Image (cartoon, rainbow, N blue to C red; front, side):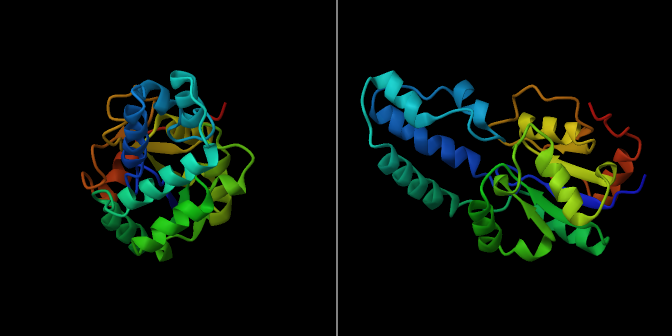
Length: 226
């Protein structure tokens, strides 16, 4: 079955915005003499609404915080850290190869649209994508398949003709549920996590040129939709 589209997660896959986010909040926890447990934080990775650091910090410290002020402060700090992050290795080459091959290119992210559009423009790659689908566009975020299905619909391709690139288990489960072959490209936060039954795992998108990657995936069955 010919591959017609490549769909990319954003946070942690195109740019590692996830490690700075965790480090920013961990600093606040440390200031208050408590620990931000990584296993708790990872509940929200690749999805949205599964972990609330403001509530968690209040419960751990017994203190009352100005939630809006804290979120605004952490967002500003997170942005300042992300401004120092480069594109992850292999992303630019993969996008160039996909464009040259005439494949549809999309982003599907559980983040909001303003966030992902901001960084795609910042890194000068927004023009590469025909479609961007965010949590603003669907009722359910990952691990539900909605985002990937919406991206495929936008590109006018069948789910089985798409390759998904993901770094988080929640995103990989969403791709599988959408009936798409998934390439796992974990980052430093997700590398040690147990992954679902994805089609292929790479340490970096620079590991394989697109034509070889597609050749390997041709031998992998498309996941059966539950």
